[in-house]
Image (cartoon, rainbow, N blue to C red; front, side, top):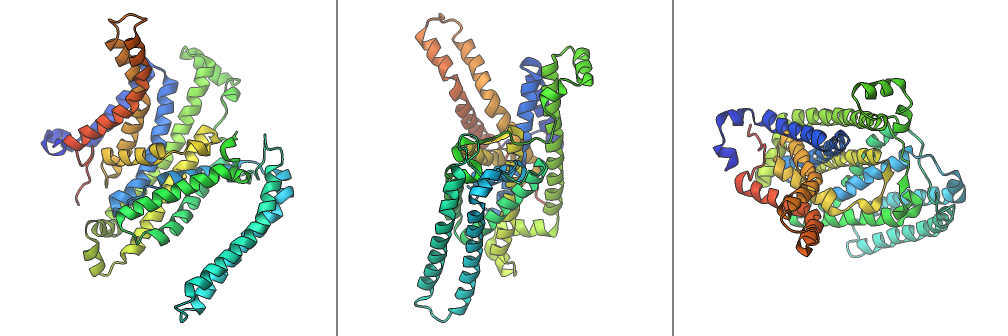
Length: 445
């Protein structure tokens, strides 16, 4: 295997060598294509690496199979809208009281359900029927209050608004709130699902994430649904503002670059700096946790739940703890992605991009190793983006002897976009054959 047959020097310097190769690839893209593209890929790689850290702490530390990454990332993106967008005053005036009233009914129903559940423990036969009646009654009352309010909100200038807006707070606040949203959802999901067998848990989390996306697409009053929310505030300057700055004009002249391109590079570098700070902070926290008694306990639970349970460890409670923690990190990354895009598009949250591609990153990088998770995020996203232009170049070289009017040449060039999926499959096959433990395997301590 790759991890067992490499040179001792490479084994000793594996991390800096592999990250150095990634740095060279980014430089090559900057030189051969454009620095704007290279930095755009870098920013998405940084966000993907943060998501991969969240997935790794669940799977690599505790062995939890979470196929609901997409849903937690979407909740983080929703936080960007609800926190940083200005409130739609007309929407609140039309149906704000109805929404607040519905929220109060939900809270009261939850409290009543908990109270009734505790009071009727002795009524075994009718217990679940009584609870169903309490919850169903609360739901019907809530819908009777909320539905008219929702219709009123969505009728307010639906082409431009039709939703409640946000709190008009700084966008960086939404990063924290996105983590809180995802952590809260993970707690509810974990309390219900973590007792299931791993394969059932995977199906449950995937199904719940689809429910989250379905709600975000259809509840226009919340974040405009498939109409999308554009113009999400940014924590960095706008390119058009930088282009009027004299120091930017002077820098572009000194580097022999257009002013618009220089302003775009500065914005992307600023984003990269913010994302790198978050990534390094999370990496330090997770490395500290991994080396602590808590980290050793989580790996013991992962390797042998029966033995850990026999030693007095509450396995389900620890699984819930790490499930919430990893999901919070994914929600944070989802809010960062909405910030980078400047828009919230529920229809763009697909399992391939936000669940299974993240899992490929964890597997390729090396589950259980934080360095490996970060590297996997960089490697997979880099080739996910670059495989299409590389495929076009390859097909152009292969079909060079054919005439410009050749049907075969046209078909192969048109099919180059599918090289992306073929590249991912090839990477997975090579990794499973030569490095089944990942590029940077877990270090046994």
